[in-house]
Structure formats: structure tokens, C-alpha cells
Image (cartoon, rainbow, N blue to C red):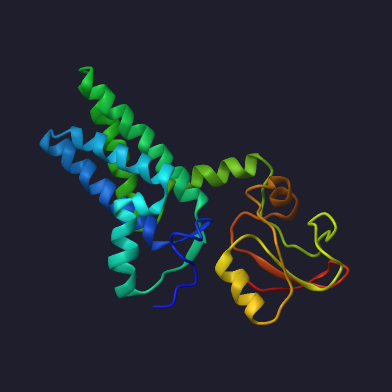
Amino acid sequence: MIRKADPYRDTDVIDARAPRTNQAIVGTLSLLALITGWWPILGVLAGQLAIGLVFGRRYCLPCLLYFEVIQPRVGEGRIEDSRPPRFANIVGAVFLGAATIAYLVGLNAIGLVLGLLVAGLALLAAITGLCVGCEIYRFAARLRGVRARRIDSVDLIELGASTAAGEIVTDCRSLEAELRAAGRTVVTVDVSRRPELARKYGVVLVPMAVAVTSSGAVVERLA
């Protein structure tokens, strides 16, 4: 299988099916823990989410299940920005950790409520694709001034590019390599390190690529 995005290298983006696989596993196991009373499972899930967030997808068991077992058989799904589902995982880890602590100190009712909240939202996302944590991230981005908009021109000097016509790519190695292989001049901009450019040009999802003239006028949206 030829992937558009390497799951372990192109971490700014992710196959949209991967978060839903993770959500299905987290939601199912959380619900199982609450039904059976095996609440330590919640702590294990919190720990696994935290390990994946800190050390990367190679240490995330649901990620490995999807990328090594499921994806090679069903193919690559839609590529999307990895930041919203990553934020959702952070929220999930915090709530599961809090639920575990609540059970440990005898506040079973609070632990049950927090666990049910995670289980319900995770299963909702897995079944319908509606990720509440992701929507919270996007709402927060809009509050910070990052709003999607049409790009008509860019300031090449501001991006540190030459005045030669070429393509502006917002940080995805596979897309950059594909464009360079096609003989295009590419300028890569990492908007995670330059959030002011994300706000200015309305970059809410990556990867994004636009073709520009030597004056900075956008003539084509490539991805």
C-alpha cells in the first residue's frame, strides 16, 4: 500500500480512521470498566493515552493496531489535521485520570460520571464521526483568530521565500516530496511554529498547498 502520509513521520496529519479506531477502543473499554466495576481499566487507558501523546504513535497501541493491521487491509482513509484529535486525546486522558483518582479516594459517583462521559463521547465519535473534543479545539482556534478563508495572495518575503514562482506548502513531508518530484519549486511553512501566519492566511487544516506567481498572487489551490 502506498500511503499519502507516513503515520509515524508526518505527525501533523493523520488518517481520519485512526482516531475513530482509538475512540472505539477507549469508549468500549471504559464502558466495560464501569459495567463490571473493574475501574483500574480507566487508569490503564489514561496511561496509554498519555504515553502516546508524549512518546508518539509508535507507543500508542490503538495506533499500532490501526496502522499496522487495519490500514494495510482497508487502505488509507481521508487525511486530516492531527491537532484536533490530539487535543481530544489530551482531554480524554485528563478525564480518565481524574476518574481513576476519584475511585481511588472513594468518590465512586464522581468516577462513574467522569468515566461515563468519556465512554459516551468516545463511542459517539467512533460511531458518528462527531468528535466533541475536536470541535472544542476548532472553536478555541477561532477564538484565537484562526479562521478559514480564501487565500488570494501571500507575502513571499514574510515567508522567507525567493521571488520566484512556486508552491507554498503548510508542512507535510509527503506532499512536499510529491511536488518536488514533479519539478515544482516548493516553500514549506510550519504554521505550528508560526501561528501568526495561520491566523493571517486562515490555515485551519494541514496539509495545504497553493501555487503562487513571483508576485505572490495565488493562482491555484493544489491540496
